[in-house]
Amino acid sequence: MEGETSHIVYSVNVIEFVTVANEYCATLETMDDLNRKDFVHKMQKIFPLLYLKASLLPEVEEMLEDEPEKFVAEEDYNYLHRKLQVKLAEHDGYLEVFDPLIQYSEGPVEGSLAENMADIYQDLKDFILSYRIGTVEVMNDALLECRNNFVEYWGQRLVNGLRALHNLTFGDVDLSEDAKKKEAEKKDDEEQIDSPDWILKQQFKNFRGE
Image (tube, rainbow, N blue to C red; front, side, top):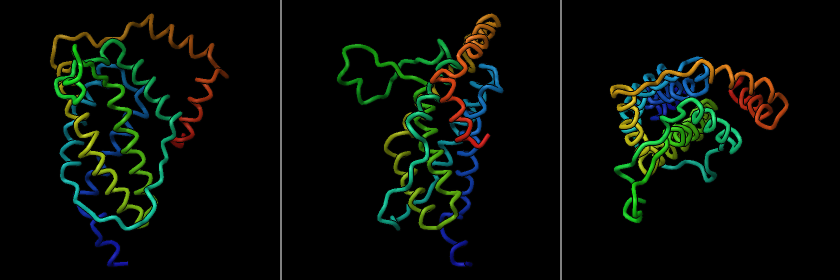
């Protein structure tokens, strides 16, 4: 047992990353509790912290033959993505300045905060749920995959999205939400009970353990 608890998956840098990753996922899962301004401001603080903690993750060697289990289904991802699009509304899109597609594009390439956030969530939630299993081999390989995905994919999305979040937080941007629009959305939700989206919402709540 002592050998297991001294494994690198229990190191300070990994535990601190797990803590921030948990906070990131929890913030997205409870975004309805925050107005748009508070949500943007909170994400503006989490993004750089998440990047820092992910950049400090140790390199590990694969221990299992099978890939880590995936917990976030496509339906969960799509539902979360739509919620983020609604939450961010017209503030979702931003111009990319660093994207491999730019060299092939004749015009500007637009990024999406909602897509960035959902993509990062998917990797982090899969990692967290694997880590919670508590088996060193599973935790190790989940850490390996999460770190590789950070290096190759979502780390860049983090820094790209942070630029947009910085502008929304400190720029001359009105993040207020129209009360009538919120009331209309609430009425829409009530009318959509038993629709495919409403059923998906209940499934997502079950996935979060509500």
